[in-house]
Length: 434
Image (cartoon, rainbow, N blue to C red):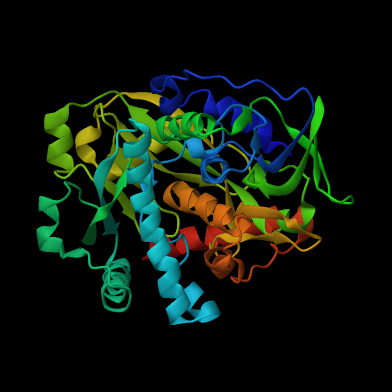
């Protein structure tokens, strides 16, 4: 697909790539190999699974087409937030309240898992506690506060509700009319974290191969085989954790996700005084519009501001300037801040924004994790743990997610992107009218 070349070019300008040290390189696969579990994708989900499986005594090989953390895992907004990308009602309607509560508890466990791994493996990923959800209109404020009340009442997850009069104590912005603060969620440097997980996985015994794109998956024999440009791997079981980068090797699941471009800018450091004036808690911030803005101050006080999206796989024109204007509209005090980096890339979204985990119907020995829908920084790590539990013989928690139903995007390969573009135009208009 043509988005791959754009993705490669955009990622080159990442603030994260400029501020993380790649102190380990992993050789490409040459020739034939065999293992217990082969994992396609060297991002957070694949590396998490590799760690968990290697620690359980499985022989593991990770096949990464480019570099560890090249995809969304290493260039996202850095926000680790409770819950899923979809509203919890989506899970309630399909699985019932009790199972929805179980899913939500796993999303909180995912946050705890990040902290535990950083501590255990000495990963300095600039973690900071705190998430601030904000609303841009009275209607959105009602939705935000009602959602927070539901989580407190039905999911035992209280957050601090912030009425408009109290907002200046939390954020200096003219845009917002209400907010909620969650001290358990937080933010970090995603590439530093991903590289740290790779070091941990290798230290636990997993073999990682970079520059090893998988060209085909063959499930016709007794064991699945992954073919690469210069070799092949035979495995007892396979995990597909490449999301939008699987590129045709599993068409039966790829129709259920779509590549969506997301974009972020970084400013030069603005200093601790201004940063704390604008966001006193230095929490990550995200609004609840359908086409949303999300931002945070990095450890060096650079503002990282994301918000523009592309549903057509075409990079927006004048990306840095258009993003700067969005940033200044939310935080006018940053009008003079210099934009130093502008980058982006593609994430996978599902139709209902719920994560899509399961096994290939044609081969139950092939597991897959996809559909994180832009909310995967924490959940990817938990997903890797769940699939490791399933491969180890305890599939109860994995199968809770696997029971969530998903539909392919309508229109097939030719029409599904134009249909999505039209749908998103409607949501933009609805947000604007609100």
